[in-house]
Amino acid sequence: MKVWNVNDEKFLKYGKVIKGYDLNGIVSALEKLPATDDVVYEPSEESLEKFSGMFAERFFGQMEVQVGFCNGKNYLLNAVEYHRSSEINIAAKDAILLLGSLQDVKEEDEGNFAYDTSLIEAFFVPANTAVELYATTLHYAPCSVGDSYFKMAVVLPRGTNYPLDKTFDMGEEKLLTARNKFLIAHKDAYIKDAFNGLIGDNIDVRND
Image 1 (tube, rainbow, N blue to C red):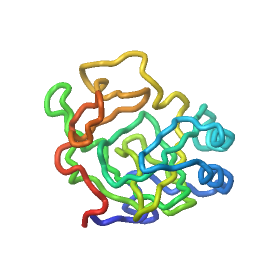
Image 2: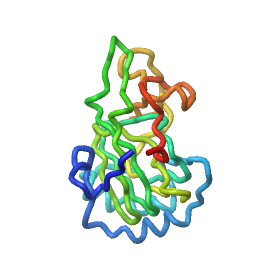
Image 3: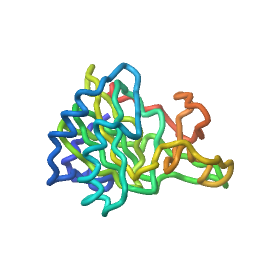
Image 4: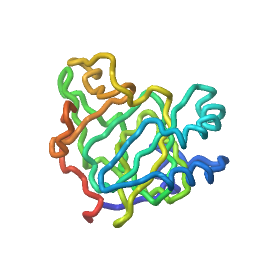
């Protein structure tokens, strides 16, 4: 599939490249964290949390935020998720984001949600780049560039992606798999307890 650059205007419907922040410290801390062939996500990481203030103060309008990471090796879409807030991604290594629009999720009948994976678009995020993903942007784990591991810091309102107090089996709430995390999975990804509503191929960025 064609991979656009986040600096291309085509990215603007999904988010924006964030300017005016000194990323050297957070990128350096992120590079020191291990990465494996498995995708590992932690909503909060002590070595990254010391950078939360600059994002809380300016970007999130003085709301409390958490800084975690998503590291590993991945080439598949597997699922899409969205939050009730923007998300900041900071790349320590080159990465590819697979993105879509929440507006394209269809509720075929009450409580059955579907998204056509042919609508997904791919964007290259150069190392040392920070991007905002809007609340209406579907996304999931970053993808690797070539054989490299990706390393991405993730900034979200505090409490996001932590365990739910309760689950639901009706309406949009049935998509909640963690706090502030609505998720639609592909059946081929075999994600436990996730709603399988992705229609079409489980996109592989290694395919043309």
